Length: 343
Image 1 (spheres, rainbow, N blue to C red):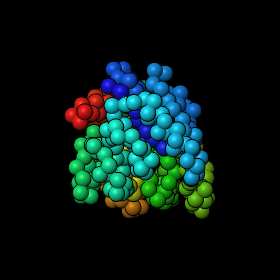
Image 2: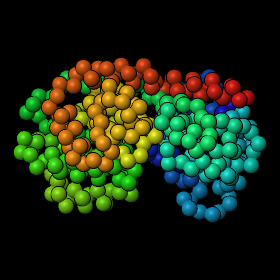
Image 3: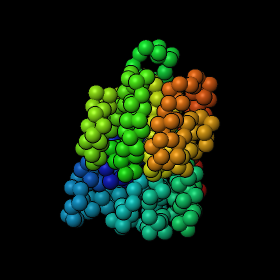
Image 4: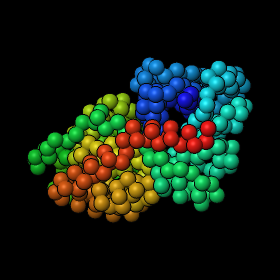
């Protein structure tokens, strides 16, 4: 089967990482290409794509109205002559003139439905996104995101009580969506208690909210215990997640929660906000802690509980849960099966 995947960028983010993983699985038995429209490229992610996959760049400047990149986009599609055009973001389909079969993965409950009628099939990254899409008036097939678990190092043993306790959050620094400000506020409550002098908070990722979040950290005088690590390669994250003691995902909006599954696969206990996507990943509380979305006091309380509980049984159950359900080989296979239904 000949498939072309199209996305606006190839930068740091859950969508881009998932796209690369799917492509690297599909390329084993199919002819796969990727078209990237904007000139927003992360070299680490680009280099992680299987060399057998052809990657085309339209080199559009973000926000540009120059028609040349759109001409390139349609030329590349014509040149590839795919059986399936798989689109991974809103807006792209409006620039494609090909009458080839188009499908779309919906990555968020924030997506508008104004272009969903232009696709032969819609795929949702979670049951939560599928249910939201149905409320918008469109049917979609739920195909959960997947992970290549063999690349994630697993936490072998618990740290000794005298060691530094490290909390981690991994995602774009966009507090309106990802809720990093909620975590800093809750962490401030934790740090006021002297028994938590040895607790640190680390953020991996970058984005438009970094300056605001750093200023919030200074406001609470937390600079000595809150660390903004910036963007890191996925190899770095997969190698180092296991060195943390607690993963927190305080999102206000989250269609799935790929980083949550990665933490669970590293055998790190997790806390998530009680919104649909993350709650689906933790089995509605079977495999992780949750707090009332945007409730700072509740998050601080759950952090305390997690740090003072023997989590080994829950960690093992969480590990078995994600490795049995969210393997990238399962995700890639499901997509191929769904493509065949519409060809």
